[in-house]
Length: 378
Image 1: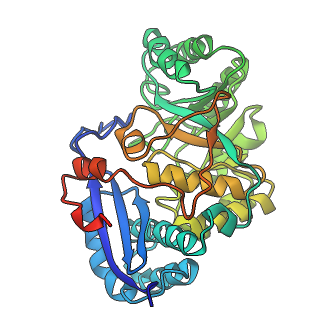
Image 2: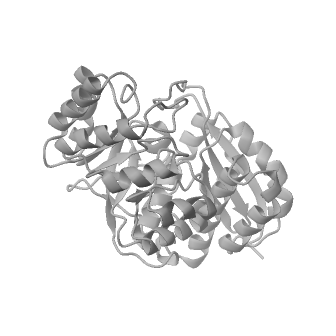
Image 3: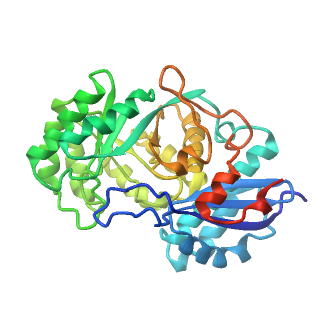
């Protein structure tokens, strides 16, 4: 009785939106992340959507008749029902993103009902902590040290730098950025590079990517992310075969049907589905298993919110090869909504409490969404 879905609420985050590095740069008031609350008589499940509040709320108008009264303890079946009945409205767009947030919230509710962390329900806990990599934007070469040193001082031992001027000015600037970053983080830290090939009008083609990969190898870069336009499947396959640096991508793809041709073709060494876009934990788990079956490593993309990070930690616990998660540094959408703390080894403990294992700071949610959240206080 208490597991029936009564309400679904959306809270768009704004006012402190971090830079994205995009050519059409985000402003603090832009809303690109929305928190979802699925409410039953027994409690609240939290989800997150990488989409603006306006699009999420419009999607919810379509999804609510299919969702209200459903059993919140059957996330895979309920999410699949939502996918099946909205197929003709456009698989992979705002509705799919919104279903992602709902699905995360349903897993959170099921974990709470079972008294178990979601990772255990996804198959078990291979680890109790995971290494977070600090995710931050590239700057000009003389600014990289100032960007990285404070983050390193927080205890991070893995770093991903992305977007900004990289691939947009010259090969010399690209190398100078990477050289400065390597010097700042030191030889013992992991360093990853994200070209941001899903940016508007990306110009980096196969030959640029191959030449750049060769340069990155000289600086012991752990992986090269989104080096090509996200539709360039054949170029990705060729680059992965030729590059001595690991090739990563897939953050813009949604649902397993989109990932399948990329995984079977061998386009990635590392695949990075984003749980707040790809269909939620139900779909991300299928994609992750498909990746494992095709010899591809699964490391989730996590440039979103604290709920997305909590989801990534839970699924990282359930896959043996997933020993890194993305941590968007300096974002109030991560740090203010829940108090994460690295341990002495620069690792992030995976919450062991029921569901996602986090209690959102409702005062911070009210501030960041500019919404009265009193109905969520229990």
